[in-house]
Image (tube, rainbow, N blue to C red; front, side, top):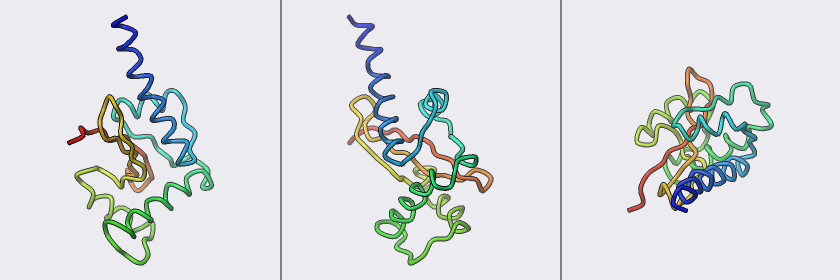
Length: 125
């Protein structure tokens, strides 16, 4: 019984991550899901623009409303802006509370000027 409880937590977390990714309009493979869970980035550079457009729309909305309060954000600005989020290592584009990991966020970050997403996990206060 104890081992099945241990197995259910990662599965629940996988469901939470898959749900968050789907809300962003992305489809990820099981391998990409494992990469996110391991703390690695997933590159979006080979995705259709229509698939990743919502990621950039959400990033701009976050920047315009809460944090930077700028009028327009261009793609060239993202490299500087993502560096400004050093406490997150990216722009938090979707966050949720996880029973096993506390507050979780999918982050937009740039690696060599190319868009990536990563998972940030933290404890609730």
